[in-house]
Image 1 (cartoon, rainbow, N blue to C red):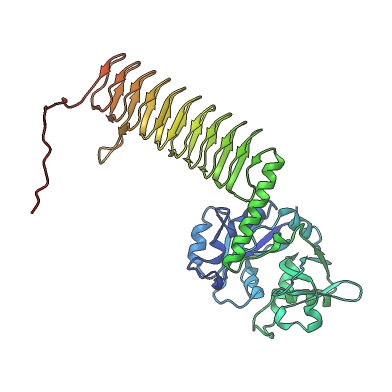
Image 2 (image 1 turned 135 degrees about the horizontal axis):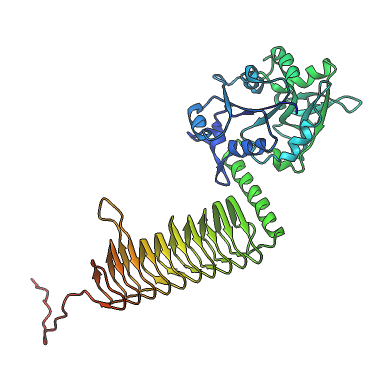
Length: 455
């Protein structure tokens, strides 16, 4: 198989973003734009991937530490041709594909079609037809319809400005062709920069045919220069995600009010209400219903479960037939067995909640293990932290915890035990026992409240 080098240009500052963050590190669907490009590029099976960095180079190195890439540094911003030239020493002998770190929605199929056209006598250029081509380089064709040059907007004549076929900047050629053309680039233009697009005219003069391909939609090749474009691409991405979910049978209350920032896998007959956000890897089983304005991160919600509005669920596994919320917060390490219920204004963390157990409202249960059929009353807290270490609260099957109880860990509540409301429990409770810990109630007849003194 022929070698493939992919060069991703990511050195620009992105002045119009008005940010201290390098442009390509701004997130789309919860992931930096350049990572979208890298993930798409990985699907092409490259031999090597090169990222050309400049502004914010250290931030980019850190952000891409988990990616197997090599870096080339463009110390001065002298145009796309100059940027690609920085990666030349690292290239192999096969094909080269040039991509952009601020064009995050490009599809692998479009790039595969582009690469398929490249050989010693042909190079590939990705173009796009635009109703409004303002700002884009125009594709100039000869009388035979062959692409012979790209003219940038600032260098174009009035006749050329009328052309609606535009350059996306993405192109592919052999390494030998690129290395032959790069030294011939000139900065003799309105911008005083080295344009990569000048290789099109060089190809023509060298007898190398320029083959063009087009993406399935224009949004694939749209780049980001400002916050408005960033927002437009975000909604385009989310619209595509919503369309895929609906094709799989997911019911969305409003496809325009959905955010998937990772991967969302759904079984049959899932319903998702408005304003929900899914981050990381989320799985929803068959018949799951998600209420409005929920945030679910890296979690699995089992079949026939219901998550009511404004709940936040993070690194949680719910086995199925669960009721969660409204306004519940399930923190990392929460595990709900079948039919377990976590109600409104309940927070859990690192908690195993057994089959059929209920924490209905206004409670905090952290570092705890609840057996089957446990009932936790309103206002209960597990006092799991002593200021230095976390400790476990272990509650046996069918135990009943009265409202406004503090369970001071480490502590164990036996099976079938009952804890009276308002208790502070710091010692283990035996099976089937009643534990009550309260101050004595006093009553004084005819008590006179203090009165305010009037001057």
